[in-house]
Image: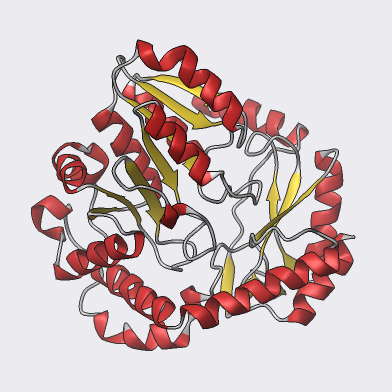
Length: 369
């Protein structure tokens, strides 16, 4: 009989020898700080909560009344949906200037449902080489042909389109507005232009780009699909897809990851709505604080104006990465430790928040140099 325990032990030893073993650590949240299981306090530069919304006092005070129930109890299509779901979908549609939005349990579930519903072996999906793993997993379920262009390389994408587009029925180009493991923005206008020329749809994953300065709001909507999450800049939970009314209606009737998943709890939906209201009503204030911290980090580190809250420091080996990570941790800073295959090279990822102080940023940069 095949022994899964023995297999697990063997694979765990291999990962440990390669410095690829993953461990889940628990933290308590105290504003911009995280407190580990030993009580050690760390400045959090690992969270994607760019505007500090997950612990915003205004938002938290607004949702206290939402504790009428703990969970939703069923799928949205049974009895799990509610008016607050409708309000959230409407708010996200208005924000993205799209016809409609469909909220899922997570961004990962969006990808698993979307590609399988719309694409099959007769279709072509072309993605940026560094697209998030959830897209790759979703595309595999669809049986569509997958082609990947070099990261942000519009010339390479055009070459692929010229070579393969005519061989397939439906086609979609997939990229991110802001790449989570690289901290750079996509050439959004150029990708949109190519999608128009070659009769394709174009999808932008805006998970890390919400309320940041990019070109998503300046391109045509007729062939655009926007995927997003409520778990990063919105500080809450859930994923969504914004598109035409017909596309959303079809997903509602076909996407297995929506139909067969329990709906999000009302308190999560209400919390996300409160965050959107808070962020949009004071957008200049929040964006100004974040922009100021980004510019200060770049000035201290000697970077050009990248506008991104995600900063990447690459290392030659996992050993070098581990050494730097330990130094930062012991000095009171929590950053993201990224190893292959998540990214091509070992790297530290820093996520800058509007809640960080200049002193925090300056102290972190001093340790990174």
